[in-house]
Image (cartoon, rainbow, N blue to C red; front, side, top):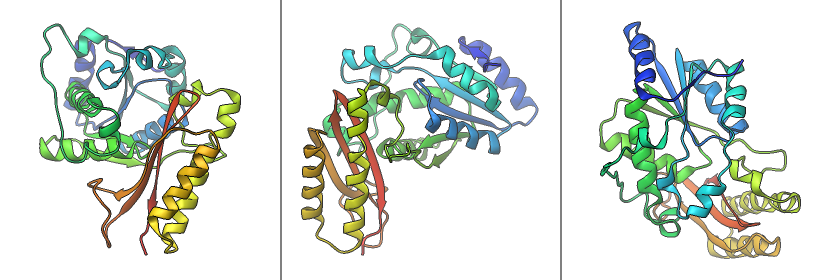
Length: 282
């Protein structure tokens, strides 16, 4: 049995009123569809800690930097609903574009600081689109907890800052990145890799984890990252947009004694791949 698909917000709100009247907690897993095991791991986490689980499916046009990328994003709504059914999802909320951004919609949510480096430099306006749609989805679903994967690390920090600054009554629950057998972080965009490209993509997590290991062993950061970037380019993963060591919370320059993250974005087969890994500075 597939998860029930709900499109009108009024229908979803009726369900939410009923759940809330019984004191039930609501978890939400925001997605753009084309679900994979990474998404399903978030759903399982929500299912174990919430009475009701809503998965949202909305391919948000405002977070894409090109109309071509938006058009190519995989859309597999009914297959997604079939995957979610056995997990006990109470509602797959698939709003139409006008439900999310009705004519005349003029409000944009912008979070400064944590959004400015890395993705912010290479994808101008992207995080405004993310912050705006996340705020809308939180308001629509009235969730008590929201579940996000750590693969999109900078996005996770954005959502944390957004909720903290706007005093939103929702708990953000981070969940570990899910990887394929060869280490590649699961992503809906991986579907667009050619078989050869998918094989070569394993070089990205391999270089990332090896660089983290060397940095933790005390090897020079700059030389280590330069070598890792060269390894990626030799594997045909190019251009490398960034490969940087950053503070895990603020995304600023790393500081001793604080959580640190190594983050990368690079291209392969016309597909943009991102990944990150924790680094314990010596």
